[in-house]
Amino acid sequence: MRAEQTELLTWYAQHRRDLPWRATSDPYRVLVSETMLQQTQVARVVPFYERFLALFPDEKALAAASDEAIHRAWKGLGYPSRVERLRAACAAVLARGSWPRDVAGLIELPGIGPYTARAVAAFAFAAPVAVLDTNVARVLCRVGGLDPAAGREALQSAADGALAIGQPVAWNNAVMELGALVCTARTPACAACPWTARCVAARDPGRLAATAAPLKAASTKVAYGEPAPPRGTPVVKVVLALIHHDGRYLAQRRPVDKHAGGVWELPGGKVEAGEDERRALAREVAEELGVEVLAARHLLTWHHRYPDRWVRLACYRVRLFAPEAVRPLASDGVEWFAPGDLLAQVFPAGTAPLVARLRKYHRLK
Image 1: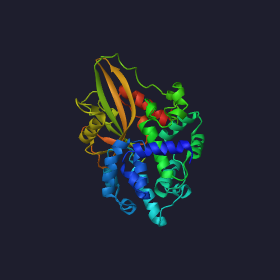
Image 2 (image 1 turned 135 degrees about the vertical axis):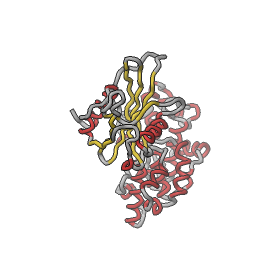
Image 3 (image 1 turned 45 degrees about the vertical axis):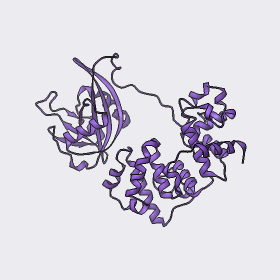
């Protein structure tokens, strides 16, 4: 074993976190943890992981579960399509009769990409493969001086070359742990790093910011709405629900006796004192449509200036537990529209930035 590998594994043995998925090699439990950890912080995942496994202890239990059961167990983690893919993978395993044990076999399961296939192969079956996530990529770019713009393929090749082949479970966990606890994106604790003496970025602090997120694709931000008002200006906060189901969006018609009566709008309303946006969204959807939010994902935030006030609008893409049960409790009717038909309707002036964003998304003129 090379000296740098011994240094990191020794550090990991002393500083590793006691995380529940590190105590198992069951491929189902490894896959559950890897699916939950996608775009979700470890501290949030731990209690969900334990509750989820209490409800669905193995692939057979999850594959047999209903849509409502899996979504209620997942609620609060976000990105609910993840649990649908997880269930589909379990059903495929049962149909095969066993779990694939290598990357090539695992990637054939529905919903499993290259990263997850490598993670399950390494952590469940101790396959000699390197796992590349953003923490690993950051460590490799800083320690080895790799170009963060080199691309995933080059970074994966570097991770493969660094792998301690005889200890793939400990090694992959160790590099991830170093990136999560020490070699962090914004404030790395270089003095606590076992590789400080070897690290290019430790001798060149200018590289730290440039290597914070090597796997994140650069994107050009588009400004929607008006510039934010001057600091200290009173602003009314509003949330909107872009509810989607089966390729259609839900809109409701404003009551004729209200301002802008007869105009179509998205469900939503004012964020009350002490509420966060998602709680306000769930309350408004329940009050206006009589249904429960399954998941809400932020889409767009913008400002709009009316003659008498500033409004900050935040729109979320929303899924419902029972979309077929919506009722017009605060409007003159609801309707499900195909994207082009929705955008052909007349909406309040304040939602123009959202309409522009949806036109761009759906490539509509």
